[in-house]
Length: 191
Image 1 (cartoon, one colour):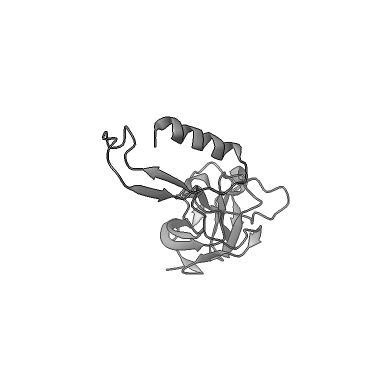
Image 2: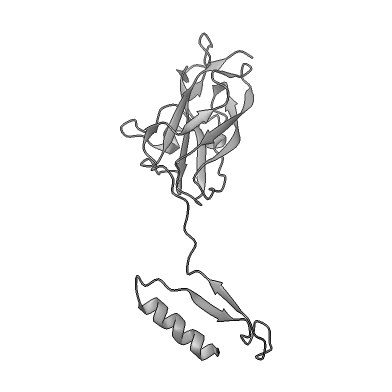
């Protein structure tokens, strides 16, 4: 099959919107093997479908924390595994610690979440995954925001909001994606 024939087939395939076509390519294509007398064929499907996943939804669900309450030393950090499911497949993920859930009216990730706690793993083919996230105790690690995650009885610096329940937020595509964000509440305890 000549390059002209392949170009013509490809143009007809693109023009036939919605048509399902399996293209059989000759191994003898010029530029592939350099030898037009080679024989053989390969069948290539026009696309590869992604596995079905549960539809993402706003609010708690689909996010799990391996240990909860999370044992964190005073003004320290602890690495704990966070897992999720039901996210958009093959999409960049945003995993962060926030002071309120994504479903809170007026939620803004840049204000409600700690930017230095955020991880951005690549999405998986089935929309599930996990990371080891650093959980902090005390004021957020960036030091510029006026809130933190504290164990009951912890004293906060002046002007810092004490949250004894914080949230791990997982969303996909962009950090501002509240429609597909899922949250898991957690508390802090002594190690």
